[in-house]
Length: 284
Picture 1 (cartoon, one colour):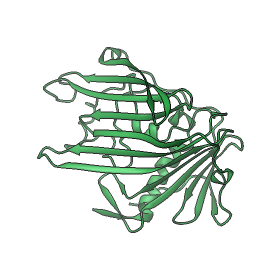
Picture 2 (cartoon, rainbow, N blue to C red):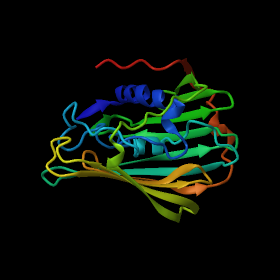
Picture 3 (spheres, one colour):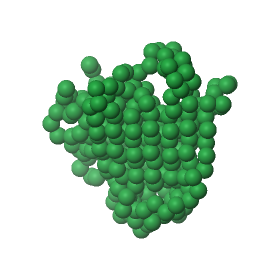
């Protein structure tokens, strides 16, 4: 199945622009939350899996684990500007799902991230597919810029040479906590320290156990996430996620450079058409 690039771009912008402009969605430190369900670009539908999502009303409840782990990891810029720690890097996200008949579905996405000493951020990505749906025509190329100095967020559609401009919220929304009784199903352990791509990182493993019968399962299910977080850069540099509903995903930063990125990376090119406000949801 294929969809046209302009429709994909519209759908992606409706979702990612809303998230990217919401500072609380992309905390720069390890955020709290519940079990996964949000694969990265190239993964499956939220909360789904080879056999589809659990029946409504039978989904695993949220706990104090890696909620929206990989979506938030890839777009880690957010709740507060990080000053004095400039860097640039490339990111790679790879996901694998195994169907009931043994078929393996693999997806890979990549891009680049930048942060200035003043806390401005830029994320570049290309979408050749959204979940299992391939893009017809030229893949959607997008750039997201957060400017905490000017209090503006920009979403650039590189293919169309347009940019959406939105104000950054003054205060991030609060994070939802776990429901009573869910804490006993979540285990978090330290993995110590290690060097990842030349920077020191602290590791954490979170295991969420879905009890027998919670989603019609005849045995306990486990959602396991490992996250390696750099206190110096204040970003996640390596993350892995194993989810029986979504599959396996690995996200990493590579080619990390600590130099100040070019100032032009955080500016909108003069030949772009500026569109105020959020995009309209495309018609089905």
